[in-house]
Amino acid sequence: MRENSLIDKYLLVKPTIRVLIEWPILIVIGIIGTIFHLLTIPFYPITNILGAIVLIIGVIIHEYSHKIHKQMHQQSEKIEELITKGIYSKIRHPGYFGLILIFFGFAFAWGIVWLLVPVVIFSIFTVLTAIKEEEILKEKFGKEYEEYMRRVPQRFIPKIF
Image (cartoon, rainbow, N blue to C red; front, top):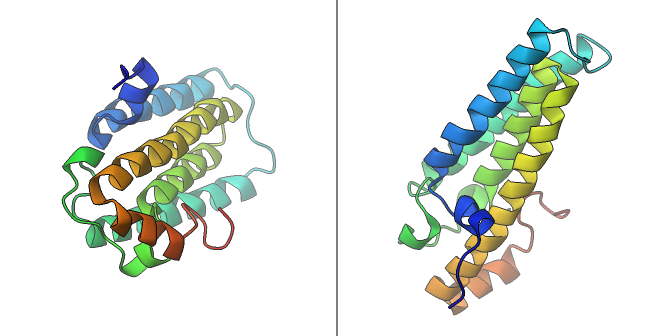
């Protein structure tokens, strides 16, 4: 077995630890952007309102997926049951999809252009986490997970991605 890189370790760390790293970065950049009047996202207040709506939708999706999958905030290796009902019957990673929506909604609601840089990076990390997690789940659940992947081919957006 090969040694995991620092990025692999970060991607597979317990989700609550990642929150303690990612959200302070977003908040600090937002505060700095507000204090120093950095470049704002155009079309104020429409983009801010749409950002708030996307953020709320992301929270709803994330919380709903957590309600169905009680171990969602555990490390992949500790997940004991494969959840395939509810929103998990439409997409494989609704919690991560909700999180990506929260990231983008937060950036647009706050309205600071520079927030989009960490948002894109954290969103890429989230997608990479889903891919890494699938490797672990395939190893752990075998054919059952592979069948689930065939039944639900999209990771994040039904019929798209």
